[in-house]
Image (cartoon, rainbow, N blue to C red):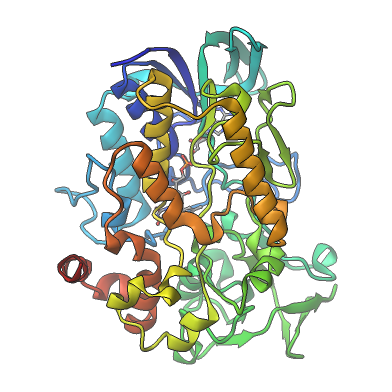
Length: 493
Ligand SMILES: Cc1cc2nc3c(=O)[nH]c(=O)nc-3n(C[C@H](O)[C@H](O)[C@H](O)COP(=O)(O)OP(=O)(O)OC[C@H]3O[C@@H](n4cnc5c(N)ncnc54)[C@H](O)[C@@H]3O)c2cc1C
């Protein structure tokens, strides 16, 4: 065991819990600040919706979780396990391989209880200021507030040697833009605020998007709604077969919306709708079928949904958010001249998209092809594992068990990343989208920590989920035998 410090962790979602656990293992003194009264972050379902259903009003009352009541995981539970704490089926729980959100929350709660993390968490404490005391001692003031009554708060300050920011980045929805959107008379909401289907009974509803949220919501509102119109950008690639529904139609994207309720699609078709649900928000699970990287990047309004937001961070402008680039950050975690005293866990984004090569070969691609060049253009997004490795890296760097390069070398690495992006014409806002590099990134992190690289089935999980969904249809989560699939891959490598 190396050095041990007083460390503040902001947030007790997946990233915060993993970070607290790793810090604790390294012998640090950990305090986790969590504004909610429970652990789980986005996995803490609430029926509450925001006061602005589209999420455009910056002064709206923010609801952290984006879950709808019926949400099931997009990844099999095997791909959401932690290194030494598998996401196994438990008695009395949801035994499904792609379980409902309650099961993920239970897993996170069990993880926290199992490792004594609950005692480290100050629930109901919202961090409102993280400020460097001075750049020599590298100490931080963390100010948090707790609610005393409907309108009064009490705030407290604490001094910490290091701060790890794990506040999540899925509360700022991305909304589709089209002329007439803001004056359209019907109900509009982002799927961030969708909870249950009842209010769409006998309504004509437009769903924008064709990722899993759109598919899930379509499946549950179509039996109640009068009509459902799907506005999609990539009509050739569908997880849902509209022909199986007699009240569902598919269109291209929305051209414009009129005050009288009419919505015109780019293909010229028109729907006289009551509601529009923007399912444009969850990039992790957006499935892109695009011809090239530039085209991918040009899909800005769908693609760039995360808005990094650190209203509490006062780092003397050392870390800034510029066009959604949080920086400078070495490997998306440490600001070079504040390292290792400030760090971010869970900031990177995976990207799922299929190259044209893959698209052409889609039907023929076998799992064994996963090492081919075509496959290397494919992202995997094992979100929990990326966070776990980042968390372990932070904890070990703080304790001195793993060394960082010099400040200059880290700054040079960040600059190199920026200039590579610039050369490739990649806008700043994609800095933390790993684009083509997620596998390399995870492999790099694992190497810092002397951990074996990810198993092949994990690397290809997201691709395979897409393929599984296309192969098995909408009920792929229940039909597909994941354990058998993993065994087959393990035995072929
Ligand atoms: C709809 C949806 C479905 C998803 N499905 C899957 C899936 O099937 N599989 C998968 O692996 N991933 C999935 N994800 C990805 C998901 O992001 C991760 O699973 C992960 O849970 C995110 O964890 P996090 O800790 O980074 O953020 P969060 O879970 O958002 O946690 C952040 C925590 O920080 C707290 N916080 C924020 N600000 C403050 C503050 N100022 N002071 C104190 N506390 C603060 C919040 O209250 C929250 O508890 C999904 C995401 C979404 C949105």
